[in-house]
Length: 200
Image (cartoon, rainbow, N blue to C red):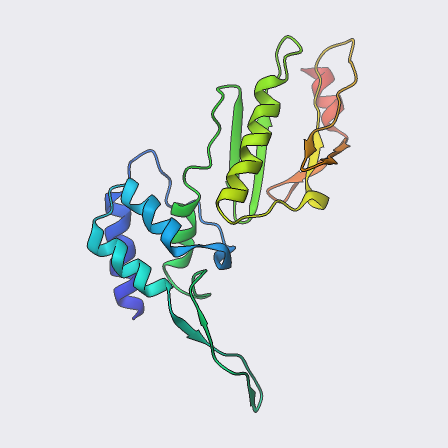
């Protein structure tokens, strides 16, 4: 089975547009809705028979859990992708390929199950930045992904000498916490950023 999955994965990668990075894998596989995925695969140019095979592969999967001598009853799953499956990272990446910034001043960085949005604000106009956050929130809802509001933080880096207050982002009725330091892809942006900004 693994050999066949690798064959399918190689075939899909050969069909992808050059602008899409298939190595930017992410891992919350249990959120995949197979019908939604195959629609996106079709838009990317994947042929119908391969889309149907992937749909069949991801739907109607029997699953049970065994702990020592005890085994649960079997449940049939038709969402998500199997853990440990060679195809799962690629399929999730293809599901999320269209999560991209619409405004030229913004950039979305995806890594495993973390997403970071970077926005450049010019002339005190935050509209493109705030629109992008709302669009990302809507995209997550439409793709069966939920934002962890408690872990979502906003960090403002202001190069101006006369800094003004920045009102926090509001996502689904909750204001985001504005922090002075945060981690990005496991790297800590500590308070020494301010001294580097002064040198710049």
